Image 1 (cartoon, rainbow, N blue to C red):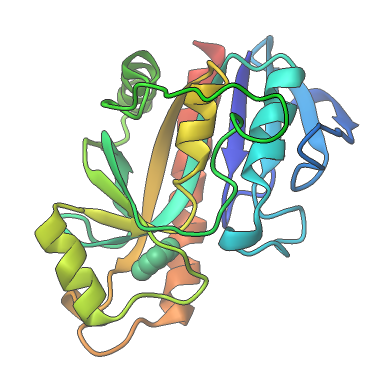
Image 2 (spheres, protein in one colour):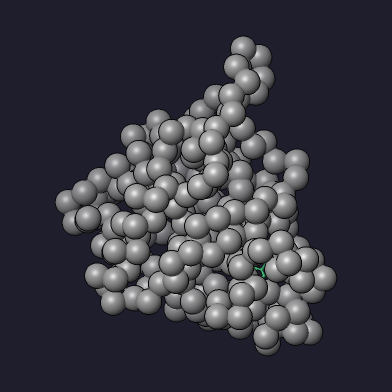
Amino acid sequence: MLAILGGSGLTQLANLTETRRISARTAFGEPSGPLTLGRIGGREVVFLARHGDAHGIPPHQVNYRANIQALKDAGATRIASVATVGGIRREFGPGVLVVPHQIIDYTWGRASTFFEGPGAKVTHIDFTEPYSATLRRSILAAAKACGEAVADGGCYGTTQGPRLETAAEIARMERDGADLVGMTGMPEAALAREAGLEYAAIAVVANHAAGKGDSAHAISLVAIETVVEHAMQRVRGILEKLAAS
Ligand code: HPA
């Protein structure tokens, strides 16, 4: 079953029929909110809003382990994650959709593995390619079928937040090879890999990253909202196509 992890601007999914909501509990605590199960085009889908229904949970306080575990317990085998990001690479301006292929993790202090604690065996996952190649291809194919232009590949630098970055931090990230910056990509992707789930992301560029383009001197948070609202309509279409595929 496909799971959709919605980020800022995607707290629910239209076109989901026969829905039922379940309040899940896991050994790692509670997920960000109730899981919504339903069907899109006859196929079962489960949806979870990463920041909670009321968008009350900041990126560094999301219980990523509970979210991934709850989706797995509900029967998910693949997770399409939606996240808003800032664009570092010049072509990645506001409104651009990207299916990233790499990650750099700048977060700290987050519970980032299932393999710790009493009785847990030390386990190292391979994370050379952090996203599922199969699911990335399916997302790109769904986008193509919708006639939506989506960039294939980009390196997603995950910062701690909730504050946005300084221009110097973005310049450093660019030197590191990051094309996008967001706050929720990790440890989510690694946990999905640990849990044996296919995982890929659709990154929605909301703004130029700090110091870039029209964010040369500041990031306008007002402008972001309009861009995200519009882009999420396109993302919804892609997800509906993906679910039915
Ligand atoms: N930085 C980090 N996360 C973000 C940004 C940004 O500029 N825009 C949207 N999410």
